[in-house]
Amino acid sequence: MSSMPSESRPYHHGDLRSALLSSAERTLRDKGAGSLSLRELAREIGVSHAAPGRHFKDKQSLLDALALTGFERLSATLQDSDDPALPLEPRITTLARAYLTFTLDNAALLELMFARKHAPDASDTAGQLTAAVDRTVGSLERMLAEAQQRGEIVDGDPRELSVTLGAALHGYAVLTANESLDPRTALAGVAALVHHNLHGLLRR
Image 1: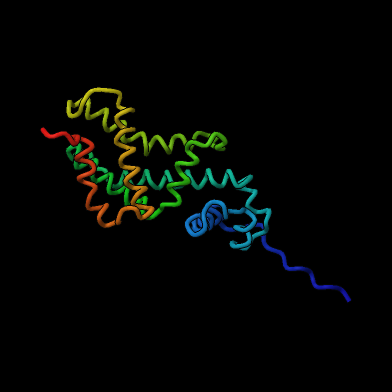
Image 2 (image 1 turned 135 degrees about the vertical axis):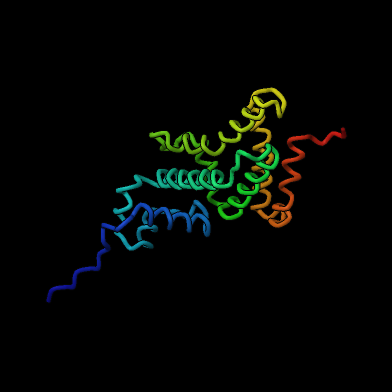
């Protein structure tokens, strides 16, 4: 009597790469990066354990792809929110609110994005991650450089100025994401945060 063949999982999937990234992002959000496994993702999607290898050679390449997806989404969010016709302060305030909202909705992903941005072993051979970072982080530096050219803010290295302002905005967003700040209060306080960073705290 012959035995029944064991059930096998399909190797192909209609859009396996997107399915893997979506499933990986859910795992990242719910359990953290340490719980990510290509084999487990394959099981959840319903494909063979070897199938993810067509798109991601290892967990590192999956993390890099997730980070890239995050930067691309953040870039689109900021571009949709930006209004170059606004004066500098309300323009930055609008962008800061958009950044804070993105952080609240994607806290775990944002943490991964900045971790992979600085990772020496990043598999970003095509420079995609570097370019995506420039479209987001670099946009603030370019905005401040343009404001300098118009005589609206102090002279100096625009990169250093963007680091100072960007660190304040990012730190504010992280404090809100980890619930050190109440989200509603934080969103309401974005305008004051931007104002104090642009004008300083000294009495005039």
